Image (spheres, rainbow, N blue to C red):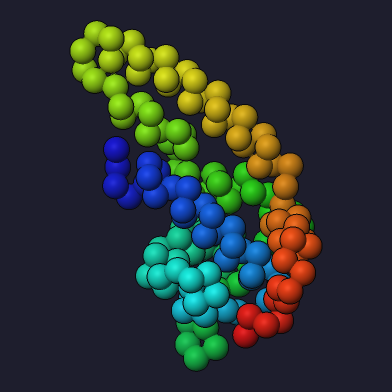
Length: 157
């Protein structure tokens, strides 16, 4: 497995943090938000968050600005940015369930299970993308706001 890929044990965390950061940025439009501020709000490490945001910037989901008023901002309309697009940007090709394939051995039974797992994980990944394509970052922001009545995106700054 390529260590540069966002897969395996780290992927679910990256995807969750990316979605939370995008929800915050969807409320900040058109202003920029520094990674340290996003990390503080998410109770995460700024370095990890910058790595995640760099992938999203490379994929054209975010734009970055340097300098005193620098930070990140959405490059796409949150009402049109699907969760599947974010997932695909972070996925870099391997299915989310790649980990179960790593549990097999090189013996005949293990090779057979690996082949069976490969088909299963491909189908699981396709199903996941279908579900994620039905929701946008704006939908997620609205749902989060409705669930956390005391949360106000204006309070972020």
